[in-house]
Length: 352
Ligand code: NAD
Ligand code: IPM
Ligand code: MN
Image 1 (cartoon, protein in one colour):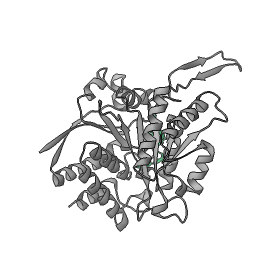
Image 2 (cartoon, helix red, strand yellow):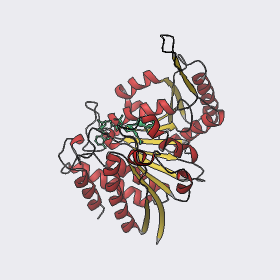
Image 3 (spheres, protein in one colour):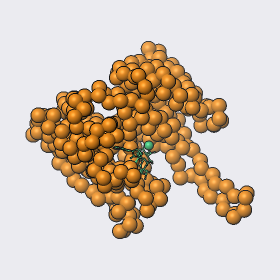
Image 4 (cartoon, protein in one colour):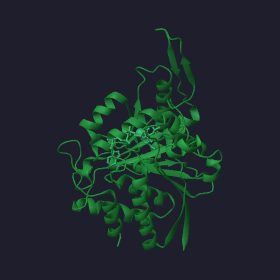
């Protein structure tokens, strides 16, 4: 029997509720497809921070390095400032394991209603390829507190040639296996250093892929296009911040944050990759048992695919889509009244 060793970090808020359900589904997929997921759970969270003063232990990253994959719920909860919790767990893991691709596929499934009126499933399928290791997410800068009106803060961005080139190249490769179209999110009209550099490298890489249709679009106009002409988009590549914002928008047009999975990928496979939903810990619904577990389940399917369990990944995706198409058991965000665990169990049962 094949065994995959997985580190599970449920984290905070609904991260805990949805990982339980996703594990139920993934374990069932393992039974059906002849593999075992050997889970090790870590209680790293804002609760741990409150107890110990740290989101994870000092050797946290080292402990994770031995696993085949990392399955993360969500990080962050009121009580701990968001920049403290996220820079204490999620972001350091992404960087330590050089998970420089944040792959965020979105697809409108039958039975799910888009926030856009009159759009059908075939028109809404995109993947955001988000830079995940540098860019606007940076600790460089500082506060210049003077207590006077002249005080200011500086927040620097870092765009390296290696970092920009590898994410753009990855996007072209993804496009090669899909529609053959890539759109790059830029903002070179406002940002005079980083984005012109990004565009230059995009053009260089595009020249290596003459068969792929490439274009660039200012991120503001791209946001409008994602709403008005989403069928004209397929692979969208963006910097860390642009990719972050566009991925929540893309989730919204394909049924909401409860539907969107995400993989933090280390393409060479020298370190573990990490799979999570696009959404966060949703404090507004945490503990109510109504979070939609589908995003986390689909993140699990991405993890199975990454582990080489392609058939199992497809089975999980089919189970999700069958259950949602039935519409009998869906959570409130999708217009139903099922609980998180009812929907999780229904998907697991659909695996047979
Ligand atoms: P959020 O994604 O947690 O929630 C935004 C809205 O979407 C809320 O109204 C929430 O109820 C709804 N929502 C999200 N997931 C849902 C689901 N599965 N089912 C139904 N509704 C869902 O974003 P936020 O409120 O900006 O962030 C809350 C906390 O999570 C913050 O601490 C933030 O930093 C953190 N966060 C963490 C991650 C991560 O760990 N990857 C991602 C995003 C935000
Ligand atoms: C995400 C989240 C994180 C990000 C936050 C919580 C730091 O929004 O995974 O999309 O911006 O990367
Ligand atoms: Mn985000």
